[in-house]
Amino acid sequence: MADTVTINTITGSSDYDVWLSNGCADTEVKVYIDTISDSDVPYTFNIPDIYKNTGFCVKIYDDNNCKICECFGVAPSPSPSPTPTNTPSATVTPSMTPTPTPTPTCSAPTYLYGSFTGNGFTATATYTLSTTLYNNKNQWVSTSNGTVRWNNYRWEVSGWSLGGVTFYNQDNTTINAPNTTDWVYQGCASQQTCGVVFTQQGCGPL
Image (cartoon, rainbow, N blue to C red):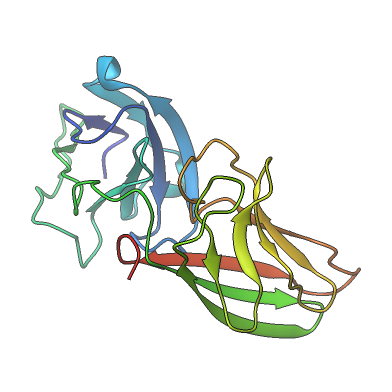
C-alpha cells in the first residue's frame, strides 16, 4: 500500500475536516488528520502506521457537516476508484476526486436517531424536527426520550436521561443542527458501560 494520500479536488463548503477510517459508516473508528481549506488543495498527508499495509477510507466533513468518503484497498468502495499498487522505484500515491452526495442544500435533518447506553441500561429513540424553535434554533422531539435542542451553549438531550447518564454534543459551532460525530455522555458510574451514537435522515420538516 502507499505511504501518502493526495487530495486533488474537493467539492463542498470550506473548511474540511480530514479523517482516515475503517469504513464510511459514522460508527466506524476514525483517526483525525487535519483541517484544510480550498487553498490547501491539492493536499498530501502521510498515512498513519495503523493504516499502512491495509485498506482504509478517507472521510471528509465539510463546513455544512456533509460527509465525503472514498475507500482504498477495501470493498465495497462508495464509487469506482483506482487501486494503488507498489512499484520498486516509486511510492504510489492514490488520488481522489470526491463529490458529496447529496449536495448540501439542507439546513436541518428531518430525523435524528439516538442509540444510548447508560449504567446498565440501553435505549433507542427517534427525534423528529419540530416546526417550533427553541432559543431561536431548531429542535427535535421524541414521544418518550426528551428533546434534542440548543440550551444557548451546546446541543443536548433535554428532559430525559438513561440510568442517570445525560448526553450532549461537544461541538458548539454548528448552527442549525448538531453533528453526528461529537456526542458524549456524563454521569457514567465506575465500572459501568456508557455510550451514545447519533445518525440522521431526511431534510427539513415533514
